[in-house]
Amino acid sequence: MRPACVLVGVMGAGKTTVGELLAAELGTRFRDTDADVEATAGKPISEIFIDDGEAHFRTLEKAAVVTALASFDGVLALGGGAILAEETRAALAGHAVVYLSVGLADAVKRVGLGAGRPLLAINPRATLKHLMDQRRPLYEQVATFTVSTDGRTPEEIAAEVLTLLKP
Ligand code: S3P
Image 1 (cartoon, helix red, strand yellow):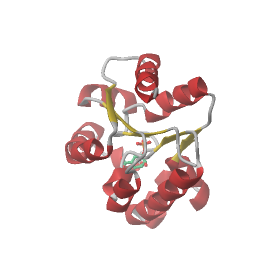
Image 2 (cartoon, rainbow, N blue to C red):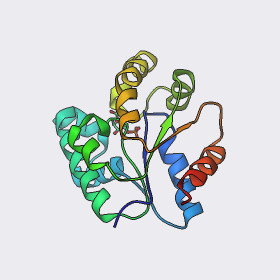
Image 3 (cartoon, rainbow, N blue to C red):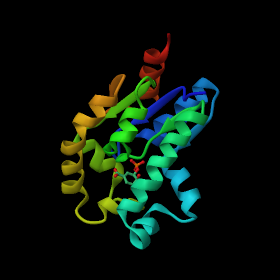
């Protein structure tokens, strides 16, 4: 069993919104590794960062990704930083990975003041810029397809992804 597709991209790329639309179009389920991590920890991501630290979050995230890749056949969205782990990048090989790319202006608008996203608690714009610069090569490395989301509606983006996924 493997996901119909795996969505990657920075916070604000639209992974959840587009992923839910895609799942509905494909008649399958949507799953988000952030939600899996929260279920395992029994608390929201912001509390995991506060109580246990980012390194612990990343450990839970790695396990959530590996489990979902092996046991879920719907549309899977990974947390924006999941691709930081080499093990996770390796595990994505052979999967249909869609990188939802976004420029800084649109990403900042979509995340607002970063509510619920601990990494954006301080200076969301500068932090996002830094994370995007650091991670872009990693998203590109794991991507089967790259879809630009700038200035586009979730429906338009989902339609392009569906076209790309067609055999
Ligand atoms: C993170 C992205 C978040 C979440 C956590 C850390 C990151 O997921 O996993 O707050 O490092 O970019 P989304 O990309 O779904 O917001």
